[in-house]
Image 1 (cartoon, helix red, strand yellow):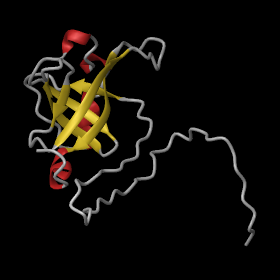
Image 2 (cartoon, helix red, strand yellow):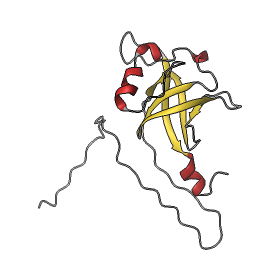
Image 3 (spheres, helix red, strand yellow):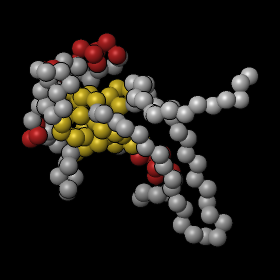
Image 4 (cartoon, rainbow, N blue to C red):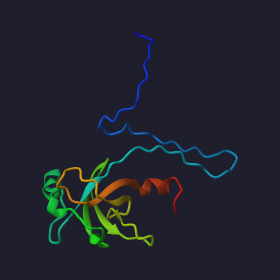
Length: 152
């Protein structure tokens, strides 16, 4: 086995980043716990409207049928509180319900409230004829965070 190592410039490979485990240890001297974290680039995944009268998809085939341009929300004002969205994040496909907090920045949450999806309006045109749209730029497992006692 070679003991030589090489170093190079980072390159985007297009793969999902390796999962980073997080361990929080209680401080023995009674000081408040501190939470360390890592982050990575999230380019955003399109969110799709689940039209009124349409059943919530229960499998990947049904979800893919909703993932069409006609179901993109393409205006900044297009999100309405309570609207159902099909949202893809690193964990898979999710159903989210739009919420508009006091700061006016829309987000979505799962029906149970355990998952929070951060939404952002982008005009990055990945394809020349692609419309501007709302994307999910990240998600958080609120139930897990509450177990760490850092949110109440």
